[in-house]
Length: 104
Image (cartoon, rainbow, N blue to C red; front, side):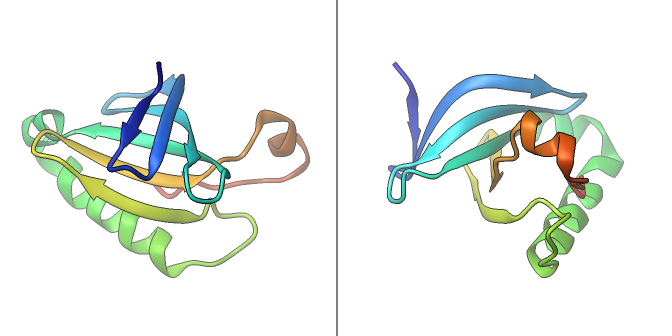
């Protein structure tokens, strides 16, 4: 059964993971729109001193930029242990015809 975040988003399957985060497919429960949810561990950020500033900078930049080739930031939420960055979902098929940039 999918996990529901803050009563707003349903988290689905894992799409990928990197050094400090995992990205899941999600669904906005209000609109039904597909989203990508990046889950960042606060413990991991604390261990890597430069990550905190990099993540804050990335979120700030994404919130300011509105460009077709930049992934749209929808919302940022947090718990004691995790940060959830909700972004536009860009399918692999769509990526093949469009250059997309994720800031962080």
